[in-house]
Length: 359
Ligand code: NCD
Image (cartoon, rainbow, N blue to C red):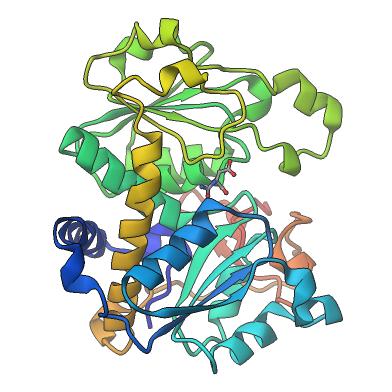
């Protein structure tokens, strides 16, 4: 069965199928209305969300399906101490597909081990957010007409921004991508993305200090919010919160055909004066998110019993009673998930669930 937990769970042909179905849905919306009647999507949101949850709900409604679930785990049995695995076992009796957001990293991957229905990761801590990635890919495709060959600048919180981590992973599936990282020291991209993703797959990346020095090179500028809720230290947050702000003056340095993306919500990292610039694609991006989630739901249910569309063949996990995942926000330090690991190609041992470096 196919789940979507990490963007690399999808092969390039599968991503292409989802993106092209989304484009067909946009062109012929009426053809798909009713295609999911009598099907149910459960949205299990253990962490706040506006766009992602409503986008899933709206997507399922457009397809004529039904939606159930919770947007506040305190109103579910989780408040009685139910585990993620038990919750999905139960919800799998009520729904055909589950979209789950969790503040604990690796929670959805752990849930797939027992689920009888496809699980979609709608964001796990600062780890991964693959449906935002599909949204971003569809947006780049629609704005620029191609994804291969782009130079993309990621600006802001590259340390905690799960949308950034996921999009970079997915871009390894495309040709001639160049990545420019624009962030202060405190918010730099985690090493596992730089080493295990960019260096391993040969995506060139460069780290710079200012937007100005690279603005003219970019085809896509991917802005992000500083993720206040993921900081452990308030002073550190205050120091970096206004790090990089996009305004009209900076936009004047960019190419005419550049696209500005932002997963939203924004705080003040894009001034509202930029909104009327035709290159500001972030509100179009929101709508693309609904179409791509429609396509994803259709495809996951179509692929459910097709052995040609399983999860990627993983190597055997490494289990060693001496080793523990160091990440306090990982599922194996919050529920009874086993501490297990995989060895990255550069020999580094990483947590199976959250990718934290163990040794
Ligand atoms: C993002 C998220 O939740 O990771 N938003 C979203 O899903 N559209 C980004 C953010 O919260 O800053």
